[in-house]
Image 1: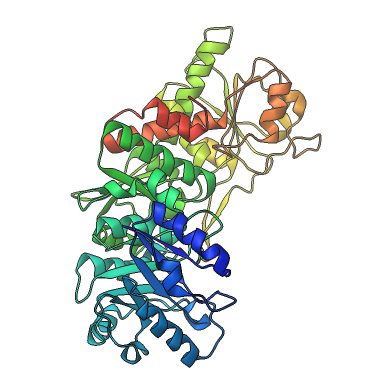
Image 2: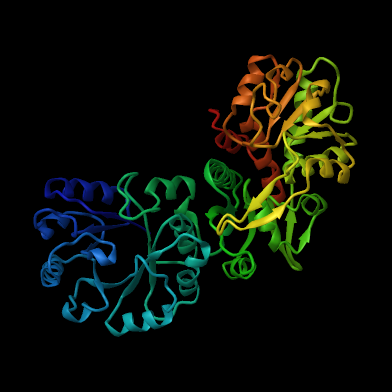
Length: 504
């Protein structure tokens, strides 16, 4: 079931919010703490055809009630006489509110600024005050912070559990909780009506995650990363699972320390991680069995748990080179392939190393250059600590059996394909800039610093007659390769179109 909380300030609009919520939800929560004037609770909930929870939270519990504690308890006692399905009570006041024959007790453990670390003890305390259901409210961003409540759901002790994490983990938690048979999950009626940060909307849970059909047999796949690429990955994979009839769901996961992550994922029965750009190097540390491309680049974009441990894969080179090969054959006048074309990579680091590996697999070769030879430095996304200082571009070329081109000599090269992997490359006429005169027909230009939006470099290249590989198609192809690696099936066209935002 999905519970939609509404927290109105106006008695006039409260009725409309409740009616709108009841048309979509299985359960409606009426939050009393934001009303400017005292509401008639019985009148508000009368006629609703869905069960109602009544709550009134203090500011310290993440609510907005500004009156005295006696006033709040009196309001809850009045609400009880209206006969809602549930009344939400904190542990410390539960003994002051008598049990009502038609209303169940939802005991709330509200810790908006504290982690849940003592769930077993809290469960016992809630049971002691007659809890029918226990609700936990706590900061939930990293998957580590969600684990205690999810473990409580997986091995229930005492009353049933529902959870409302505050933060980015709420979407992930909702799908996990549904899979673990939580009585209900929380969502906002619509965007802008969230009572806490990170709360998903009803539409998101229904359309993006297909929540009603999630069950204990649903296979959960984590997507690790940030921003638009992560969101597009989740939407495309879930649309594909629905179309091909697989009982799987992708959920966004924000990870913490790598050393504890493998055990945590196994505990939560997550056996696949799809890794979006920006996190592949960080997660390489948990790989026990890297395939050759991943080992060479020290970077992964797909993790699979097998009997002998976590296997790491780097498939981005397959996706990129497949699209470039198709572009060469279709649009370049001469019959070129990556085996016969001159390929120039601007930038160093893991992506350059991966592309050089891929070119070798296709019996091709590459040249490498960069504005400076200081190389790429990676930082831990959580603490900011330097992880790896990569070799210089010249050393990279030597180790990968590629030709090194000093950046000032760039204009003397005549590549057929230009791969840009360095975010610091700028167009201009300074010694450390890419001269726009270099961008001439029939050059094929690939910018791997983005997998969604076009960059200034791509716009300029197109204006100057180059054949530009659109980042959205790179993303779509990359998702296709990842999807087949996970499921053994092709990514449906409709899911591909959804990933790159193309109308069917």
